[in-house]
Structures are given as C-alpha cells and as structure tokens.
Image 1: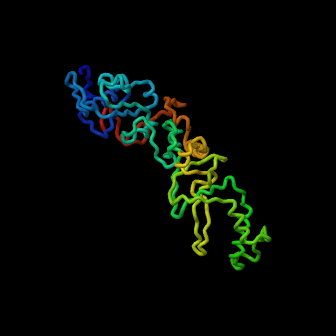
Image 2: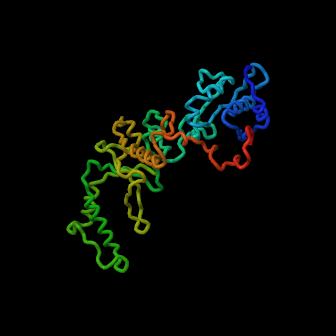
Image 3: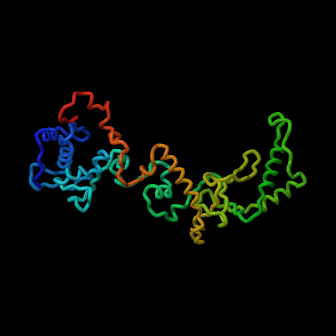
Length: 334
C-alpha cells in the first residue's frame, strides 16, 4: 500500500507494544498513528511492504474524547491504512467506530456496536426498550404479558356487572367477627354493616358481581382499556386452615383490566390495548435514568458537547493512574 512511515521513536514503541499495553506520549507525538500501525500489523499488514493490506481485519473501536471524535481527527490518521468509519470509504468490510469515552458501555465486548442493549429487567421489557432506545416499531407481541402462579389464574369479567364492593366489605367483617379472639384482638369486635342480610343472601349478592373465567397456572395477557370488556386478572388463594377459596390481584396486574392475548388477536381488539400500562413503565424508566444524568443526552445520537471543555477528560488522563507513578517520558509503552 505504501506511504506509511513511522518516526524512530514510534517504530521503537511498536516493537514493545502488546495487547493491553498503554502507549504514553505528549501531544503531537504520534500515539494515534502508532496505535493504528500496531493494529495494522496485528491484522496481517506489513508496514515495510508496499501495497500490503490486512487479511480480514477485526472490527475496530476507537474510544477517545468527545472533542476529538467530533473534529474527526481520527479520519485523517486512518486514511493511510485505508480505514474509515464510513463503510463506502472503508477498503475493508470490517466495522470502524470512533466514539467518546462517555459511551464506552455501548461497545462492551465488541458486541452490538452502535446499538442499544438492555442490561436490567426494567429496560428489557420490549415496549420500554423500543420506545426509549432502539426506536423500533411497537408490535402486538410487545404488548403481551406472560403471568404465572403456583395456584391458578382467573379473569373476573365483571366490568358490566353490579358493584358489590360494599357486600364484600360486609363479608370481610363477618369473617373477622367469626375469628375474633378477645385476648388477641381486643374487647370490641367490629360491627356488621348489613345485619339484616343472611350469610346466604350476602354470598348470592357478591356472586352477582363476579364472573370468574379459569385460565390456568400460566397465561399471556394484554392490558385492555376500560369499556372494552376486559377482566380483572386474579390469582386463586386457598386458606390453609379453613380451605376457603378467595382471590387476590395477580402480581403486576393491579389497576388494569386484561384479556388473553390470543383472544385479543382473534377478536381484532388491538386498538383496545391499554398502552397507559406500558407508558407508565416508560415514564418510570425515564425517571430512574434521570436520577443519574440528563436523559435526553443519554439516548441522543447527536455528538455531545461538554458544557465545560475541561470536563471532557477521559478516565485514563485523570490524576493518580498507574503510569503516573513513574517519571514521565517523551514516548513509552507501559
């Protein structure tokens, strides 16, 4: 390929370099060019041979400061090696990335370079991940939730049935009275609200307000808007002492109505999916991220401009690092 030459101090450093080493030198000493020369050799290139090229070079990730990235200084350094961050200008088929040290987490292990990957349960929810990071289209599958219990899941299709909450309150009071222990609970049990209604009548009135549909131990559901015939998602609870059966809200289902995903698909009720369930998760994720910095900057693809240029100091240039324990040299490998 020709045209690639190094100064004596750069060639000397090149013979000492190894994976994981630190190349130390002042501004303008040619650290970038020497680093690229090392990469070139490691990938099969020969600096002493004209027209030498690399053999299937690995992807190249250059982590620098935001200022140097945005000024495209590395582009000039890479040109003699026929490398470019722009695929159409890159002689090779490998990926070349130049980015700020602030974004180094994006390139962990070299996987998914330039793409967002989720590392926490909160952000692995497809709707949240796509809405905040990847900006991909939300699909029906992204609005389906799998729920599982050790007992049984039920949908209470009670949206159009009478409100029986007062009767249920009365039933709860009667259970407390039946199990009242004066030594344990005190001297005055609660009073009944509806003393004139028998237990049988009370049970019948409560039953009028519920329509339980058995689902199973595992099911896939979609949150449904009010008025779209969704049900309350409940789990069966068995009292170990009495054997009495009751129902409690399934984990993560409180405050919303639900339908089995398959039913939503068959009845073409996709427009009835309650996105507020997922939008609340998105808002919570934004809030959590914002506690550690500016969210808009965190997800932006635009070049980041430091409020104060002195803030753009990468960790390897901060005081107290290992290479600063020894006297500085003009150009050296540590």
